[in-house]
Image (cartoon, rainbow, N blue to C red; front, side, top):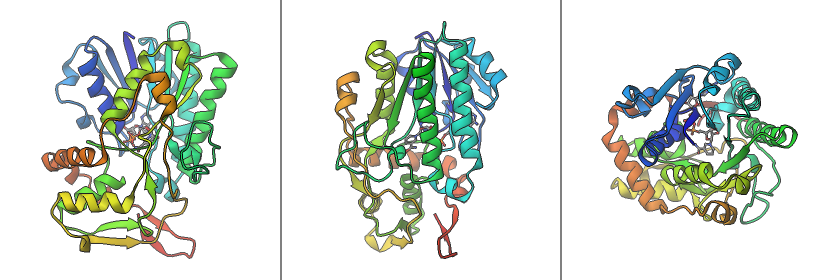
Length: 342
Ligand SMILES: NC(=O)c1ccc[n+]([C@@H]2O[C@H](COP(=O)([O-])OP(=O)(O)OC[C@H]3O[C@@H](n4cnc5c(N)ncnc54)[C@H](O)[C@@H]3O)[C@@H](O)[C@H]2O)c1
């Protein structure tokens, strides 16, 4: 890998990956393509990075085939993060999810096909949300795909689109399904930063339903290490593969809230429940077998350590999150017509 296109590199996981890649592989030329939606911000990238001669920022949309064509002429590797990524927002207004997540991925896949002599690897970032409710205690990559929300179904369409391009056109695709991510630079609409900023403001932590929904939480730096391993694994080991990235255990949303309250010296009286959102997945635990076998990767950061590090980052970066406070919640209309902030 000499030169890589990172779509969505100004978002949460993408910007963490840019930072990780620069530190671990300083010789690799990086091209970020990002439309800077409400979720993207150049401030997520290190302030000095724009001055590096081997860093290039392309402000634009992944649905713009001409632009993607121009960027693809400069790279040998592609990792595709760009997406609309918030479940609740997809329940509120979903057209842009299908536009970006499905049609944007079609543009990227078509351009990989067009430039297939040069592009050696195309890593598509899918999500565990494509599985829907767990039908087995531990979910492996063969678990049925039953997406429960517009976000999940758009991502599912993109995931299968990439798979079909690999089968039909033999593009060098790998599909990655990360489980729930948390860490520095995550938008306040997501659960962990919403809880952290509420606790820092001495405000109630609002929990959907009874808080028993349990997820497999992965600290974003661990995910970055896995993604670098995907880029560097022998091609034959990963080509056409779907790989889950998870820890192999689940922690409930109520437990996450409790840990954050303890870390910020609050008691449980600050916990408040609101009606559950539609399409809530009750329990997700990833199988870790395939990632360990193909990538030699296992998540290393336990949830307490990861939450401590994340909290420390939000404490130190108040300017970053204060600007986003007004976007913490999305108003959803429930089945009975009532409106609830999520
Ligand atoms: N956050 C999670 O827990 C999680 C878990 C599994 C998978 N994922 C997937 O990982 C990827 C990154 O997630 P994230 O949490 O960093 O998302 P994010 O919302 O923080 O960032 C998305 C980035 O994509 C950019 N973007 C959006 N639409 C675009 C477009 N049309 N053209 C170009 N850029 C565009 C945004 O500006 C932003 O920088 C997504 O594909 C998401 O589905 C996320």
